[in-house]
Length: 285
Image 1 (cartoon, rainbow, N blue to C red):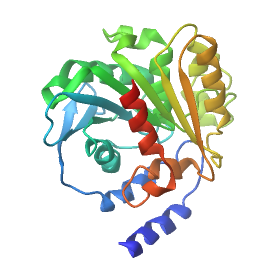
Image 2: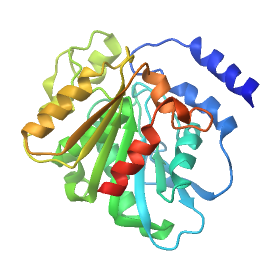
Image 3: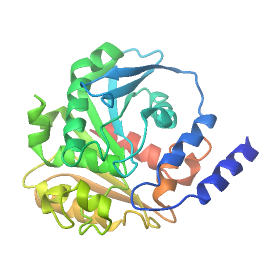
């Protein structure tokens, strides 16, 4: 096991760090993930598109409906797959939380605001069907890493997305953003400029949609994240607090953009207290 962990770390070290795309190596960590203690219901459709699929991780032995955690992965809104995130599902299903990992449509098939619209559809599905998988629809939390954190936080910042899907902002008991770009304009890379309809489109940033009280948020980041700067979390939290919302920022010293999400996986959990901090947040709300 130590040799495998070292090999995975060496592979991660060779990967590039272009904006928001550095989260795909999490797939390699699936090799370390226990397969017991939970059941996986995969390929469930929450919408008509082939990318509208999700996987539900159900803890075995639930005595009563458990809290639900809906997760969106990163990948620059242009890559990623729910099956790469077995480690995330196991991390929280092993703690009695019904965990949902959702795919969503990607660029260039779609552009903003399709990512947030898909997030809203996924949340509507979770609210409707959580009870069939041992979850409590009154205790839904939404989370994401990197581009996925943007999806989660945008969903909680702009009410029109969930309302268009037939839902309510109150469905979200809390939101956990991990290393997300909430206030990162201007874009300088051509794909992002195209994806978000301009280099400096204020409508594309979650921070600009907070004009009232929003669900409580935990915004986690690493001090060494050069892909999505920690200031995104600071500014987002300040805006939320100014509007009367609860917001907490946690910064993990010496942790980068990939390391923060890896710290939820077996073999890497000693790198940060992210898992414990997320569990505390869920339990407290």
